[in-house]
Image (cartoon, rainbow over all chains, first blue to last red; front, side, top):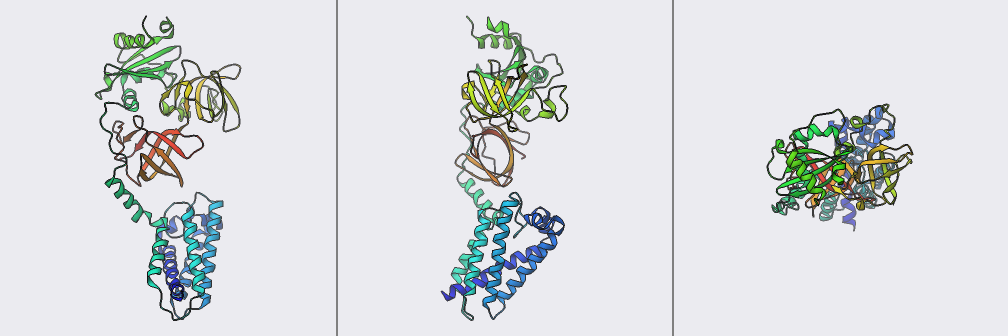
Length: 258
Length: 201
């Protein structure tokens, strides 16, 4: 148990170092500070100074945790910081649900359940760190596990592991594999050809409705539109991609009723 | 006796032409549901509501009349007739309209305030976002931080890559890429059936 507690300062310090350095030296992060929830909290003009201040606080706490001897106050400071994060996330979730939290990187994802889980984990680690006895060797496997969990909860890093992983899975087991050529031409394919045809361009001004009816016959798709008191019927070839092959006729509704 | 379809078929194959003489009104495809600026009736003041357009959700259906509550809390009565086109992931019959469906309608406003619809689009949505995952015939779309589950409908869904013609093969879509999806919303869910996926590459 002591070993578990003793490993917490390192885990927290690692994360605070990352967060603090990103805030102080991440150029893109500063550029996007105006769009984070922090800008909503302190005002857009004060977003960058506030970001720097938080970064400094994070680095100071990280240094206090890393430099021996470890004092329970170091853990308390980390706990205070983590509580602040949770409060800030709660504020961002309610007040600026579309803004990013501006916590660790320059991504534009809004606060979600993973952000809360990460801050909660940091708070738990900080509470444990307060009970850590001085000069106790850390329990490395758990520390590694915790770091992995914290990294997995960081959506800032998704593009480095989650996206490639999902792409790999899609490549290995294609979920949208090309359908067997069944001969069925989707309607949208015919409409695409239709809309580019001289026949449609010349008749479009008279059309008053969207597609009313469509059927296939003898390699031709018939597409029917309303055209005021008349009906416009187009004949679109099912094969080939020459828009000039599309034909059009206007038929009087009265003639159809007979 | 010849059927209606036979008459239409012989008209277009017999006397049909490659082009027709042009006039100066607007056209209506599914895209026109969103193109309010260009397809607004002439004579409508900029910023004023277009009397020949209605949007909202269907509250009730009686015979051929839809009672629709607009998002601005204005009620519309919309009459659907034989000549009205209905879209719900494609051309459908009037029996496909359900209470709860979202709707855009265009037509002619009658003196009694009823809209005689010429075209009705049910649950049509047009959303942009990036694909966060692809599995089991669905795309997960991140739309401004909100997840939208987009279903591929065999025989209906197509992808348009850049300038290429639409294809039923959606396998070129990639995780993390940006797309625009035209589709039909499943009412009261975060799910959409895909009509067209527009991909920039």
